[in-house]
Image 1: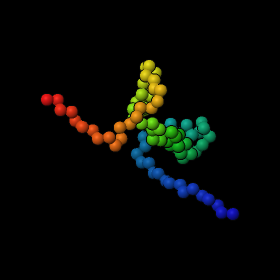
Image 2: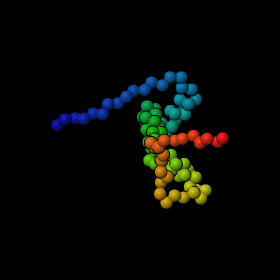
Image 3: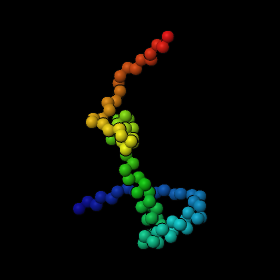
Length: 90
């Protein structure tokens, strides 16, 4: 049987405010974890859902304002690859 182990990175964080460290220690105690495990959990939670947008820029912008009455029947088409020309305003 082959054991598969994921590689784990290490991060060293310097110059953490003593007040922040104390609060982190208390938080870890409340959650029954070591400070290291608590920081690992905080970092993992902060990165969840941190993915690229699923739609185009226009669709993402419209989604931000959907509560203000903007609704789309279909996603806004992007202008990728189109040649843009600057209009002559003379």
